[in-house]
Length: 315
Image (cartoon, rainbow, N blue to C red; front, side):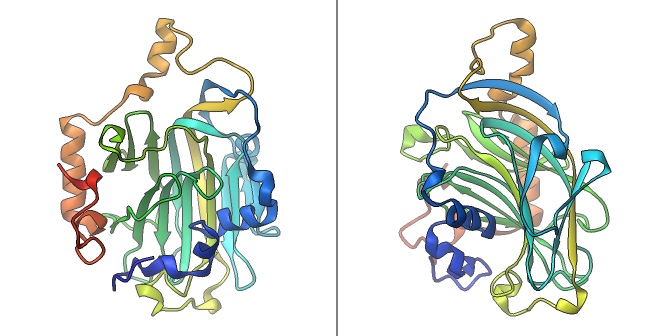
């Protein structure tokens, strides 16, 4: 936890007390307990490119009917009321992935609500790559919250306001996770890169397989202006919709070939995302997004890091 007076005082909410950073992962850890240990088998990987179907690729994990797969698996809606939110997860685990997901967020007064879409492993030393959308009063901008956890340690928050209204239409939110870096993109524009700086002693998610998770839940005690603005339950049910899931992934399984085992030209082309990184044009787009739309950067928070920024923030 930290003592900054920014809206990032979110880590005081009760779910963090059991070692996880959102309601879905906490719910699953609590329900499954010790059964979440990875199987003691020699797991291998194979590459899959998928124009996804929610019936085929995902399973609803909680919400008692509040999550609904629609349009023959082409979209999925999550809803939240005063009794409960809802969530889903991928059926497979992945070790490296390039994922696109379109979201249309809760419209109107969404204060207190949080819509999430992220990758996560399990356990106290879990890795995680987060997109979280913090609701706000009608007319105010959503806050797009990003974070990277490695070996159970997060505290790498960057937050943005978007250059469009994410409640009016669907927009594409993408995660590229490969051995070189993690890149967050919005409608094809990269907004953040977390590089593999293991050579400098910075942990990087590269050994633990992760699932895709998504949830819509109530966090009125911290989500909007640090909890000053509460959820207006007269507006419930709140609904967010996901569609057009597309992925190129290395599936973690006990059988199959590794991502790099097939050296054919077609395989090499299909796996090019595993070697992808930002070029000068991509870096310029990140700089544009951060200059114009970033509202919080842990790298420049001297109250949290009076001894100097974390090593991954240094040039």
